[in-house]
Amino acid sequence: MTNLTEQAAEELVTARAFAPGLPGFVGVAVDLLLDPASAPAGRRPLRHGFLDARSSRVAVVSAPPSPGLEVALRRMSDDLAAATRVMDQHGLTVLPFATEASPADPPHTYATGTAGIRIGLEAGPDDDGPLGLRRRWVLAHNLAPVLAAAFANAPLRHGRPTGWRSVRQALRRDLAVLPGHPGNLPVQRIPDTLAAGFGPGSAIDPRTAWAAHVMDSPTITGRSLRERFRTGARLTANDLDRHLAGLRPPVAARGHLEIDVVDSQPGNGWRVPVAVITALLDDPRAAQEAYAATAHLAGEPLLWERAARDALTDPVLADAARACFLAAYGALARQGVSRTLRDAVADFTETYVNRGRCPADDLLDHTVRPV
Image (cartoon, rainbow, N blue to C red; front, side, top):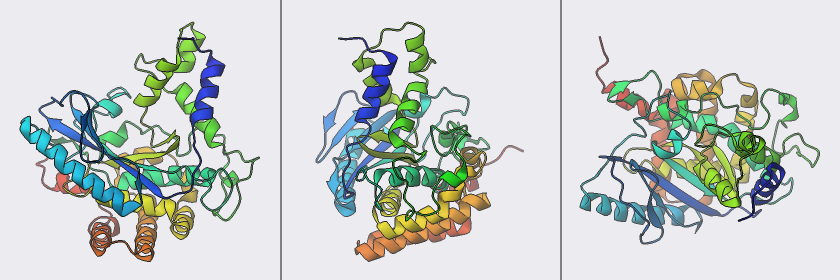
């Protein structure tokens, strides 16, 4: 296979970043953190999607892209039930939290040793309309730490509090809110509302930002792709694909938008983040409201660290979360989704968001802290 140059690799990532398309299809993947660490090998077909082993500790249930939120939820429910039967047959327990990792673990631990929920949505049309991909890219990143804080559910290591509400998100604590612009993108360059156009001359270029992230992220060797190219490594398109598959940023460009900001939730709690994220990005009015509530967050210092450690006890994140969950509920009501799903979102909002809590706080409430 032909070896790539650094420039060719970057151009390939840029060209494959987005397959523009109108919102509508929804994909869901749910990780299962297993005890003992013995995920069944190979890919197994389920009723709609597949069960794969990402590592010995994490199995992944992935449903196919589905036409609309409720179809996606129904298919995932079917597949999770089938996956649970497989785990029972192997004598495995699915743990009700997201990780036993340490904040000091290497970056690839996020992909191989932690469990979360990923939502795949269309990239949006390649224009500056209300649901254009540039606006969706920025909105998804603005939302990411807010959603990570609201759904934080990994406060323990070996059964003891770590000082973080999400050790899983603590692995991201040094991230900027908007990638590719570390400290050199003036906040005023981010439009105040989605009604303000980004335009072709905007400083925010999703394709360029994604390619830079891919090239500058560490590989499993600890060095970035860019460093490896510049020190003489001979890398092929297959090497690039393996690197891309192992990356777990909050928002990824995989042809579609992949949103990976939610820790595993107990029971059927996975349905709430899928509904909230889909509503906030795919409903034009909710997207406008969520953007208004989060646009200022790009200028907030240490926001990912605060989301992982403090979650919704942080007043800035809490205010944004309350506005976003209200916008999501309004979108779900306008769309006429089932009463059961709306009630689940309303219950989560009342139990956690409106009280400045997250699921991790339930675990901490029942954990005996060292004297």
